[in-house]
Length: 442
Length: 167
Image (cartoon, rainbow over all chains, first blue to last red; front, side, top):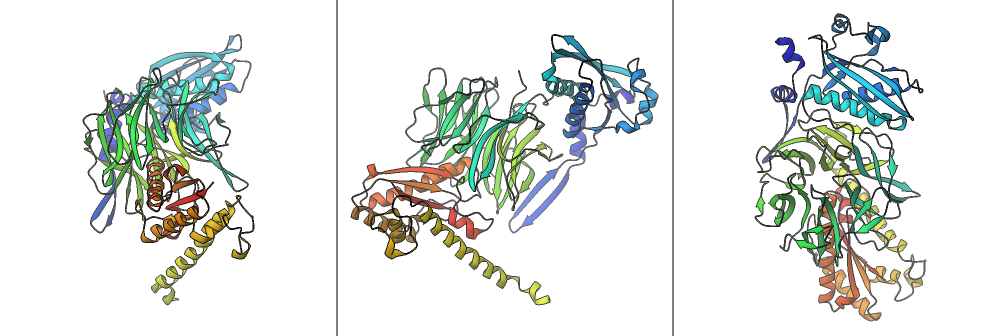
């Protein structure tokens, strides 16, 4: 029983551990007290020996094992055991694990896999996950794909391991869209870039001849929406077909449009339209091309985000003076303020799980990323800095992606666990801002 | 040695002053660099072509500044608007674009709205001073096109601006 619970601890158990070890970092200033909570957890030791390869490309086994190892280590919930410590040789391992030898090097779980040719340029990757303590196989699967798709297959294996051990869906077979920022001969060049969540396969989808902001994937990942200033230098919301790279203006608004986000069913965009000193929220139906005005107050309403069931929208507004977070029905009715702390609350994004809203908070010259429940309760700040903003969620709602800019430095993308644990930079070849995580690749 | 540590504020003030002066110089340089509407030599008032964009920049100032998170013009900003309106009337009401900008201490999306609101404040003030509404358009760059780079109030205050660009 002890062994079983040790192996089968799911995310809930890990979460309990995190809560039990939450460290409160308190910054006190006159009249205000800010707590940034940073969780710590004990990652699970996992052994991932190189996958045996009989495929034409003999290096595939090494490469696939490396991607799986990096995914699991970087998520912060696993600690891969150093392959130098492995006792059992890879050939005998294919006949079955010598569990005592894996227990000796303190591996709680073990992944054994192999890569084979599957004909027509395809490969088949088979893997088994063993509970070393219980001496039992707990997972066994195979994925087949083209040779070129080996990274995706590796991410799918990592997703399967994550799901079996942690209990949540994995999020490794995903992409991130962001704004790359460079200076060419002193002039700023902004391009929309798409890369795998681990930074691989980065490619640009815009030419860099105009200012672009806030790109976001459609739920089916066939499109992105973003704000493009174009040659006219006026911000407008566009939709791009990622296959054809064709760009379409979204709505004939007589003014500036920005801050677009897809509805969860992918049929609508919610965005801001600014004219005459007033910024209001609108929904744009991409099938009927109809426009629905959602807010009408003479204020700035922006950064809207749908709830995962599409029934509500959270946004920030300065209707009360200071900028705060508000939730309303998706048709614009029943607006309720949900943030009541000190400072300015902005860029709310609803978790794909529906349980939390992540936001940016600005207080006394410092920026924070925090989460709260959709009713505004349980506010918790998880990181802070000179400038942190544009938070969004990974598809399982456990990790947050955001932009961090140091006092002397360029913006970069970072990810952090919702507990404040495992903050890490996501490597990009240029400065990067406005990152947005894709759903799991269909 | 101890004095240096005990009295850092004198140095800080001096630093701020230097920063403000260089920020102002940069702001003026920015105006000159956009002046491809007339003669390129905008360094000496005597050389400027009356009615050129350089002339506009030097006669009235092309920009007004705002307090943090505010879109209300200051007395100085209103005076600038009055001078701009007078100049525009003198040269047959050329069309102009008013750009609204913000400092980098906000979020990108909100700042696009705030920049639009600042541009609109300037437009209303110019209209109050007799400029035809139809000859003015507004754009917002939010915090995406800073006039002055820097991580201090001296730079930020130069970025919270509405800039009138004569077309």
